[in-house]
Image 1 (cartoon, rainbow, N blue to C red):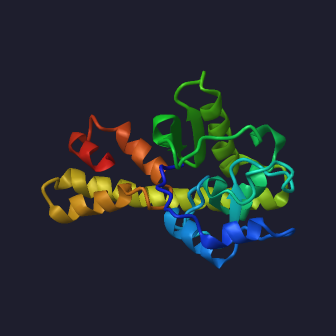
Image 2: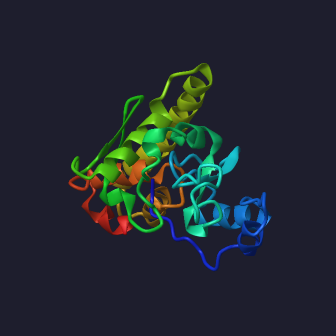
Length: 219
């Protein structure tokens, strides 16, 4: 999960649809703005592009029984169907980190070791961070059905492929750190808008002793 800059004003259709008995919160102006704001990445697992997008509510509206949530622009997020389904558990109703108002990189460790994904809170006493880490972990590891096993594995496979690109870029940089092309490739890999950027950025942060000059790329 990475920091996202939400754009304003809110899509015009939300105010119109909220007044209707059965209004729609995912009309084209909403999906277009969310897709652009979130770099067409699922805000939970960071797969990109999202081929099965859904407009997700960070705080559930419970069939519009909780006022002020269903059409609230600040409560709408760009998600893949898999992660939206995983998040649809009562334990997440209290709310996870709001990546539009805080930087999740300051609260969450995103790690890949071989083919295993580990996600944890930097501060175990921060309950919101712990809950967020659990959700992201489940997005890669929840295996309580055949469909989820396949969906989780697809994300692990995609993450491994992206991390492979980072490792290659780092190897090239280490061989020739003065190369402008090598520096540019590293910058591209560490951009927040890239797929699984949180995992790539955390890896580099944990290896700054090997690559001290890359700290400026993590701003």
